[in-house]
Image 1: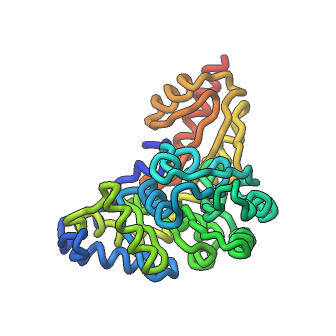
Image 2 (image 1 turned 30 degrees about the vertical axis):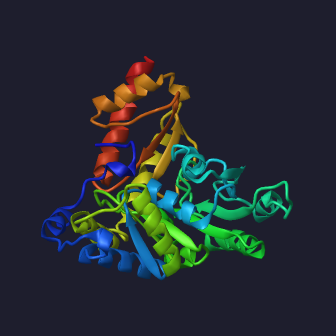
Length: 342
């Protein structure tokens, strides 16, 4: 069992069968029918014109940002966003871009803060051209941003002629948590990146969607970054299963996360740090006087992989973890905490 991330999910048996039987062609030439179907399906589900299959969420964000901007532009994003913190400085290395980070509230940038950050038209300033938002917001604890929040930011962006890119790695988690059609969220973005290999359980890949001309430009950047794939239908086929069969089951991950949070709250010395809205539970175990090594070893004894930084850790629920697993973990952890405190 593994709490480290929802990236550790294994493909379903149906995904493995689909990969083995997939019709394939050369995707660089646009001739892989399975890839083409995945791109069409993703664009349709998210309310956009066209899609582009990419190897990862990081690559998807990279080609999106590059296609939106030119060297020297400035982009606005949340100060703890994945694009800013966890994508190896690609904004600077690949795009020669300036960054204006904004400290948000539970991952949401207030429109008045965005407005203050937009540069005036002045010969001394870079051009502010792109706003990047993230939904759900990872470091805020998997918080889903609402249509009202996204609309408020969208309106400020459009008032100042900014493009909007949505890092929607877990956008379906947001839609399921809010009990709305995902299009109600994606309508407030020019482009969207979704991950297939997290809660949706596909083994690899992400999709970028947007207007046809944008996707054409992004496709060229994908090729530049080494993402031109050949008979990619064998990895696209599980992605189709992910979008058609695995979205609604995300409710199970949210339920196991809530159960996990409730159980952890009952252990003296453990604090749950986030509002548990989707599949992430952030905790601080300083109160039980364990180090990060102690925590990792305790979880290992219970049959779980996990990680920690200091006394802080994020626990992710996902496909393959059920309610009985969570109950067993909480019961076992209680016993270890009690024995270690004697």
